[in-house]
Image (cartoon, rainbow, N blue to C red; front, side):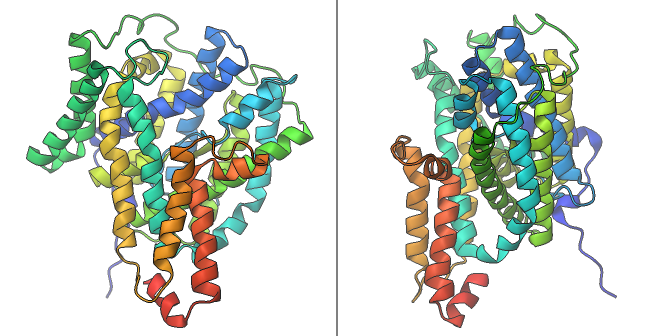
Length: 443
């Protein structure tokens, strides 16, 4: 009698360990999750209290979205260890919308309507799984890791280009110390220590920063201790057709990126991600995005940096990610906890980010090692797609003179690489390929 293998993502750990490991996920993505509401809120001319409201709303909604994605309900949620957060993909578009006459209500209306459109078309994206053989998935995963390296570099330099010590040897040295601690714990630690290497390095790096005067906790007790998220605090959503069309393009990018994230995490934890699972994951993404504006937040998507954390720690359980989701919900309701996490210096996160994001890229290279490059066009597919993925990273203004829809799709290195890899694979290997070539890709 055969015994069913327990899926890696269904592994259960003790509650205490799950929450400690879940905290690693929160620390890894905290800077990325609060940046979009701060940027959009500043563009809208909000004062400090209103900006704080957007930040706590982002934490709360992202926690709820993470729980939905990781735990799942019928038809919603991939049940994979994916952390959800406010996406950067739509920041530029939402900044342009908020600068108009309608302000945040127009942005929220466009997010609701476009996300509902995304919810309707999500099942169509579930059928693209056959267009993601190793030559495509390996390329996309590699670009995900490479595209995150500028984030780690900015964190290491200080996080804010306007800061007086931006790029100082002290900041970069603090990042190097944190990086060294991560590597040390992986070199000399036991299995348990390796799993906590990132969290331990962040804690020790923060303590060192505090002693050296680079971390301050004086503001932790200033402000509200408990604050439940408000509902429609900026007024009723306004549904503007032009704004909805602009955000619909963003939703298509989010669907593409989330599909790539779902496939990437499946490769990393060695579990099956079929069309049904992709559809459930995308529906959860779009449902969370459609409901987010009701709580004063913005579109949600899977955070690539947390995929790197899964890869480097080897902790594949979705319940650990769900624990991180609960922490995010608490941070959204307990601003004091959010202020404690916010006190972690950006260079500390940058040092940890180098390993985390590099691990994602390395996972993609490992997948590309499965690809047959002999007598095929696969080398051209990989080379061209990675180049397109890197263009917006090395030259962010490259597409500034192109139409909006092209800028929207190709300004994201991840979506650019994904689109180019899929199209070139179809042209070179599916339409004109031989059966042998196609079989070598599917292996």
